[in-house]
Length: 236
Image (cartoon, rainbow, N blue to C red):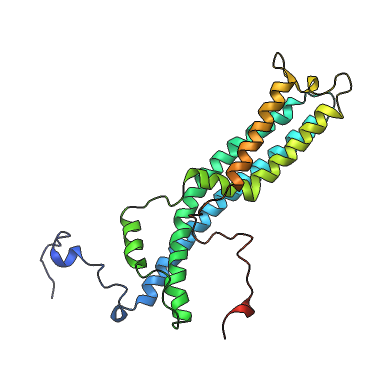
């Protein structure tokens, strides 16, 4: 028998159609699995965006170094490469904040749903995880600051790359320029070599402070050197 009653999305029953979806009687396993799979897919997509930026940064750095040490090209070619790496760093830090948005949801479900399903002897990590996840779906918010995102990418990728460029620049203005000595060899046009050297040193000092200063990390589930463990350490 057909029902001619019009569908009213603002009605009491229709408005709360999602209520109880994850309760035991509604088969929460299937719904949660689909939700988790979707979040992992989004996280993977943003992870690939980060990798593409890193690949471009490494490719351009290699090309800059090859060009800088070929023939009599000026030493500031290396500094141009450093500036381009900085641009890629800023782009990647912005993308990292987006990536962390999806990863934080994945980690929230892993810690409070799947970990609890595998071993129910321990309580959930966050008793308010459902409320927090619900609020994040209603109004998504970035979880980490731009400065922390810069620190993550500097530690993982860009500070080592920039250090290689710094070493190449030092070699270029000392061993490859025989006519003048440092700091004169570091000059660019009317800018004295001592000023250029001070700018480079200040740049690396700021980058090192951002990457290494003590802080409370907000990124959820970020692997670090101290996060070392083995399967055998788990309580039997």
